[in-house]
Length: 306
Image 1 (tube, rainbow, N blue to C red):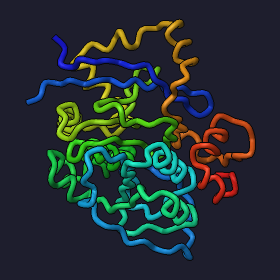
Image 2: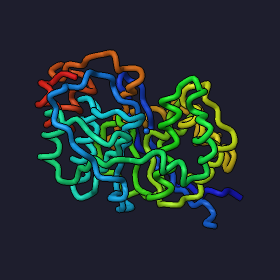
Image 3: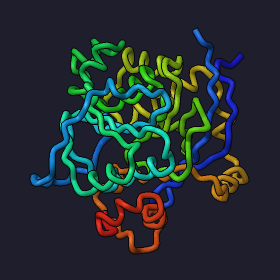
């Protein structure tokens, strides 16, 4: 008998350069028992904002982003992601968790805070979070430092630890939100290339699936391949506890249904693949049309180019 009883709603995630991630809301009834930012020079004239601690992050249905590895600035595309979430969830706290205690308030950040009262930037004490978790020894042994991708492997566990501690909805900062996500309580994203995607997750606090992911990272950490502690990890946990083969059947009719489904939820523009490109929002492309409509203030502030 399955540990997870899923009720999967066909949804979609439209990827930049026609890479499509379909989002399925996977209802998870399990037996009860840091994101990498686009590197750009900081404007030294930017006003610095001293951030409150994450203890202010108390609302279980918050939507949160993580800017990891001590960065003190957020580039335009990431601000666009935050604005899109705030626009789609006017009455929900949008908490941007920073591992730096200060934030450079660019014009984009200032405009965002002025327009959306539900957006907050909070300091995430990553050290304390790790030390209070089952990953304490992993952290003390600096396992991520010895890995091939130290920044990513330091940041990836934070999403699981935060969701387990507080609950809520987590989004990568290279995700643009098209629709409100609050109706579903326990869900993850599903990629069509046979991986569940941890870029989009929503769980109640203390969910056993999150605990399984944390335990797996603690016992069998692999820092040598990209995505092992994100999409690969959560896919592994699902396969261990349930049979996902039927989800990944090669079904052309089903694929066409996804491509024509009007209920797309997010655009995932894969920062790792697109960070070297500057995009003109004045041109007609999937990304530019969505950005103009879903992060209009950010688009205007950055002169429709980022």
